[in-house]
Image 1 (cartoon, rainbow, N blue to C red):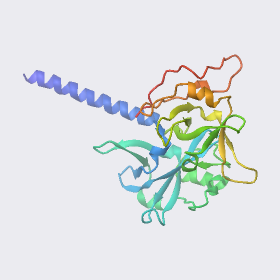
Image 2 (image 1 turned 120 degrees about the vertical axis):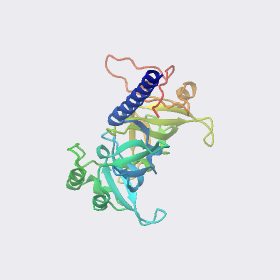
Image 3 (image 1 turned 90 degrees about the vertical axis):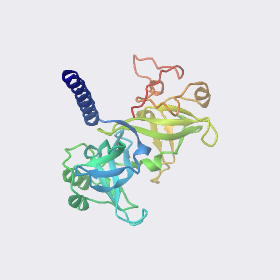
Image 4 (image 1 turned 45 degrees about the vertical axis):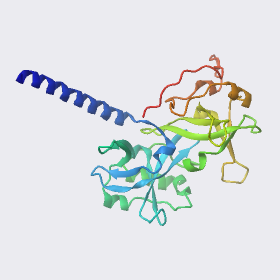
Length: 279
């Protein structure tokens, strides 16, 4: 009887250890996350002290990646908050507590975090300054990531919901519903194109490779007016094509939206098997 209990306990411990190891490996490798769902997540340090919450994410269109997580702290009901950018390499997305809810963990104590570089609420251009960006990386012990002078950075909150047009920039075919990225590297897997529907119902979703999306803004203006697809996609082709369901987000981009490469035939906007986005 004792031997039986011992074997059962050993198996249970082994299963627990295996699960813990797998989760640890997964956290080191990073997760594939929806950008909008990271906004509002609590930010803690390794001592599980609350440091603030995720205010926004910074996207570098040219670099095809999320470069920074913006942390807000202090203030009351969003007023008077201090905004501190953190390089994506220093922000660890993980689950915590018994409810296993998502959070962002930083390897910095609370006192040091209060001295971290901050930016103005209405001016994020500081992040494009070479020396300031380098000092920020040094503060969080992040090696050079070639982020220097990253021009045309954008906030995720300003991009989601923006109109997407065809290649010529003439026909509106949908809007950018979401940005999906790798938490460990910041690499953007795809932008979710929302097409059709009415008041949010009956929409189709397509996973468009980020490199197939171009930013367009009027001359002399800072704001992005709309996005365009660099591949030839019409409203009619999207109406006939199958997208992915709202409850089954793919982990990778839809190659049908990739620009045709030499020696590689372009796939039709038709059949494609979807892959679940890891939760």
